[in-house]
Amino acid sequence: MSKRRQIDDEEFVRRDIDDKFDDDKYEDYEEEEKFDEAEAVEYTGINVNKDYDTEHKNFINYIKKSRKKISGLRIGMIVMGLLLVAAIGFIVFIYTVEKSENGKSFFSKKKKAEVSTKKLVENLSSKTGEITKDSFKASVDNSNGYEYLKIVTTINGEEVSIFFQNEFPEEKSGSNLLKSYISKGSEVIAMNLDYDLKDINSALPMIVNFTDGGQGFLWVNWNGDIPTALSLYDVKNMEKSGSVNLFATLSYYFDVQDAGEAEHKLKLIHGDKVLLYQVSEDVYNLGRGNGGSAIGFTDGFKGNLDADKLEFSTYITLGEGGYVGEYSASMTFSSGGIKMGEQSFRPYIDANYPLTDYTNRDKFPTLTPQTEKWENPFLYKGYLIKRYEKVPAAEYVAENIADVDNGTRVYTDGNGSVLTTAGVDVSTYQGNIDWNKLKASGVEYAIIRAGYRGYSKGAIVEDDKFRQNIKGATEAGLKVGVYIFTQAINEAEAREEAKFLLDAVSEYDIKGPFVIDTEYYDADPTARANNLTRAERTTVVKAFCDAIKDAGKRPMVYAGTEWLLFGLNWDEFAEYDVWHAYYGDTPILPYKFAIWQYSMKGLVSGIGVDVDLDMMFEDVFQ
Image (tube, rainbow, N blue to C red):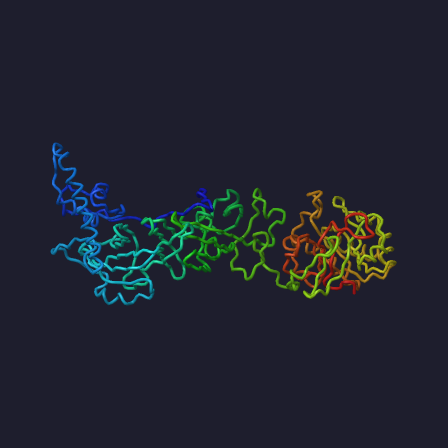
């Protein structure tokens, strides 16, 4: 479908809810006496909102009816007379308003005896005692010759009345039957509300606070617990501030388009998030505009409306039961209208989403709407990820991670006792290492690169400093583990890498860990293992770990956050230890891992260049 106009988050939403009014003509007055609002306001001094229908415009006309047509020759003579009449009219109006406080007429016009009427509620006076809000008082008023429910309250320090018409000409019907007004002093504005006087409390407004000062009236149409429509009135300035049809408004923030690619693909755009979905034919047709909108907002709607704002959250769907994410937003109130506040759209990201493309707006990788809502998904960079079922949850407390000298960190019990042990991982890039100085600095273990597989032809190469490093580390009394940078593309190559590590340390009593380092090779996007599928890469990692375990040693998987979330299926090797690489202040991965590599620019005694720093939560050298 064509792209809808996107609304800026700071734009006030002013969409009126069915502001149609009755334009029926009445024959009570002659043609030359048609309503002229500007003239009436000038004559009476009353600010009457232009949304009055003809029936209630006539109450102004009847004031005018007594005026005679005057020729142009006498204009000069009657100017003072008109001013006098206007003054008298204003005094009469004030008098009638004051009389209305005693149950007299609000519009000072009697109903014609020959007009048959009908009522919404027959015994309206019996309903006035049902109001549960202490700030509102109800009575029955016969205004404009018809029966009204009159509500009086105080807002902005002023007494204000609200009138709901209960009695109508019998022949009158249709959607514009209901008439309601706000009256303050000499000012009156008409409204267009769908009210029910059988339930008086449902007809009452909320008094809400404006962000720019003052208060206003807010009427809400509810569909169950969902506030589907809101109408806001600025009582201080006696004008309508704005109206919002909630879901129609939200639809402007979500653009659904035909993806223009393979059959039945829709593009969903919200802000900077652009997602492509494979959908059914029915949903595809809805998304293309052939029968409605495919986007839905009502499933799981939860909201809270108070005097300051409306806050809500809901699931976003594409078609019937096709869940694509979660959404939350807020709206505030002001004299300028109802303002959309902060929004948060968190799409569901399938774990098979191509890792390197999940934020790439040019490639639009394809997702599938989920058939079920996700329970407690993991939020990562604004996207929701389904949690692993077999991987234990993280047990560390972020506040207990403490910085020490020279950029090193420890994990404590919260009372100062250190629970982790310090370590490094090294390769030929660290040059010649003074292992005794390193040990004396407080480093307790080292994981040493034994070799790597080439990223083009796939040959396994031993690290230039491996034998020197493993000899120096073991003689200095450090715990030692080994790793290989993998470019394996199948199970056979994974087992070959495992055998290479086992053979490399055969002269030493190395208990572990034996680590497969799996990561995206940034230096060359065409590297042989970069474009493995998630399933293929998981098979490689599991085959390596199984081979190490079968040899009686302790396997371990090294990977970064996104690789663990998108590049691998962690559930398939949940029994094995994980060494997590993340360089933020605290790990964001909500899963248990044994070692955290928290820096790649560490400085420690015994090593003259930057080195990776690690903290070990669980002893993996047993």
